[in-house]
Structures are given as C-alpha cells and as structure tokens.
Amino acid sequence: MLINDLFQETSSALLANKARSGLTILGIVIGIGSVIAMISVGQGAQSSIQSNIEALGSNLIMVMPGAQRSFGTQVQMQRGSAQTLTLEDAEAIAAEVDTVKAVAPQTSGRYQVTAKGTNTNTSVTGITPSYLEVRNLEIDSGSFISEQNVSKTAKVAVIGPTVSEDLFGEGADPVGQTIRINKINFKVIGVTKSKGGSGMTNQDDIILIPVSTAQQFLTGNKYVSTIYVSAIDQDSMTEAQNDITSLLLSRHNVSVADFSIMNQSDIIASASSITNTLTILLGAIAGISLVVGGIGIMNMMLTTVTERTREIGLRKAIGAKKKDISSQFLVEAVMLTFIGGIVGIVLGWVLAWGVSYFGSITTKVSITSILLAVGVSAAIGIIFGYYPARKASKLNPIEALRYE
Image 1 (cartoon, one colour):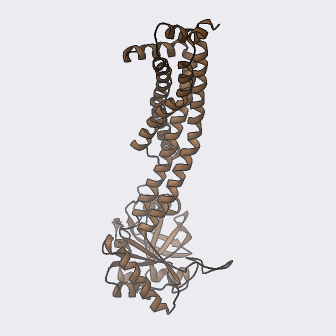
Image 2 (cartoon, rainbow, N blue to C red):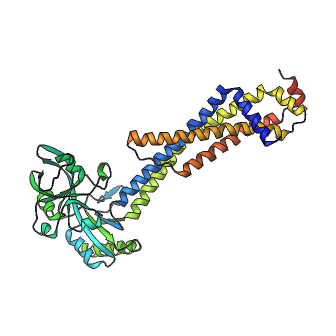
Image 3 (cartoon, one colour):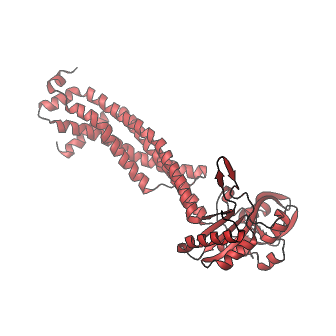
C-alpha cells in the first residue's frame, strides 16, 4: 500500500466517526497538556529559586551559629539557634583568610516599624559597609551605611523599595524621613535598588541599620546571626570554606564545630534536587491521564476493528497482506495521538501561561518538555495501537466476510 493511499484511508476512517475520534483525541490532549503544564510549574520553581539564591551575592559562603549533632535521640545545638559567632570572628576571617574578598557579618530579626501613621512588619538587619559588596546591593537614592555610622552607633537606616512604598507611599522620597523601630527613631539615609523576591526571601522588604546599633538597641548582645563571606572567585570557594572552618575551630577552642558553613553552590544543588523531585512527581501525576488516554485509543481501535471486520476480510480477499492491514490501523492510532499531541502542546503552553499570569507562580515551558510530549504521544499511539492492528491483521478473510 502506497504511503499516500495509507494516509487517505486513515483520514477517511477517522472522519467517518468524528465524535468518537474527537473524544479519543481529547483524552490525549488533556494528558499532554497536563504534563507540559505541570513540568513547567516545577521547572519555573527551580529557575525562580536558583535566581533568588544567586541574587544573594556572588561566590557567597554563609557561616551560621550552631551545628546540628545527633546523639541517639538527642539533638544538640540546632543550626542557627545557638549564639556562637561574633564581630571579632568576622574580622579575623577578613584578616587571616587569603582567599576571601569581603566579609559581612549581620544580625537580623523581624520588627514592627512605623512612620507617619503607617506601619509594616519587616526584617531589620544590622550590617557593616561591606554588606553592599558581598550581597551585590545597589543604592537607588541617598547613601549607604558607613564605617563612621557603625563606630558611632548611629541611628540611621537604609530601606528597601517595598518598605519605602509600605511606609511612605508609591513614588515618595523617604531619604531624610524618620521611622520608628522598636520605639526608637531612625533617620532614613538611603533606598536600595529593587532586587525582587517573595515572602521571607524578598530582598526589597528589608531595613538595614549599623550592626553596632542593632546589637545595642535591638538584640542586646554581642553576637551575630550570620557571617557572609565573598570568596575571590568560584575556584577558591572550597579552599576558603576549609580555611574559615580551621580558623573558627581554633578561635572557639573546640574540636567539633559550633557553627555551620554552607556555600552558594551547595544551596543551589539542594534546592535543585528538591525541585527536580517535585517536577518528576507533578509530571508522573499528570502522566496518569496519558495512560487513560492511551487506553481510550486502544478501546476505540478495538471497536473499529470489530465494526470493520467485513472490510478487513474484503481487503485480504483481494490481496491485502497482513502488514498492510496492521499498518493501516497502526497509522490511525498514531495519527490520533499526533493530533492530540499537537493540540495538547498548545493547551499546555496556555495553561502554563495562565498559571503564571493569574496565579503569580513562575512557570517555564522548555523545549525538552515539548519534545518529551511529542515522543510520549507517538509512543502511546504505537503501544496502544499495536494490539488492535495486530488483531485486525490476523483475521481470517473467509470468517471476516461472513461477519454480521
């Protein structure tokens, strides 16, 4: 049978029962569309998390107080809950570790902040001037916290654009205005440029004050919550991490670390692992609908074989071979899934766009997911169309001609 004839016969057979063919295609459309949409949500989440982590700074190493150690059922010193790091530790890292470019200790907490009858609950972070370089911040207006501000325990603040909008309104210039943190007046000296983010990781929803001021008036102690370290380059991060570990073990006079160190690459790798698992899970759940669609194709093709038994018998009687019969029914199944796959790709893209636009969730439709959808749809057509095609090709022509 010529290829042209084969496709003509296939088209005629599918158009002969439009409603049945349409419903069968619909099952594949829903399956393919769901898979693409779900994978796009997972990949979008991975991309968003990675960009947020990278926005924290370049070649970043984070030193946090406390290390989780388990002894049987007992867990001691949960990471971040202990107070073991000081400004002196940060100064020692900057002075003694050669692979370090800049060091930025910080102490942070959430406080209710008021200004001119407005208020917001936001993160207030005590910092040093090197925070600007280490965290890749830029000033949009005003100035940044200086060494003089730190040494004099000045009550000054640099605020993010979200805080500026919450407290002073959109388009207002807050530089020179006064805000109250923990019932203490602070003068706004600058506003940072927007970096984006959401929830607890929103770097625009933040207030920065001198670390000495934060320790004296907010936390009431000498400890810091995190020490951010910027290595001189990507290749030096492991060496810098090892040198910092050795230095702090010596300074704290301990054999087992009372601090934890993580670098940017570790965090990205951990986040990617979680989001990859999420993507696979979402794809697998959506893939169930593909199996259902495949079963629908098999059901339709088996019904078609039964309805066209006499036609098959006639074709075989005038010389059609087994491979001609099986090819015809197999191509019908593949064409159904191919049409469903194309429409499903469009539906998946529209669903991904809709989730991103209306649900404020980042989505990312990749070429890989589209190629996967096309490949899966073709595989479904072949796998679920093979049995009905094989059954049709094995029909006895004499018995088929007698079929009522």
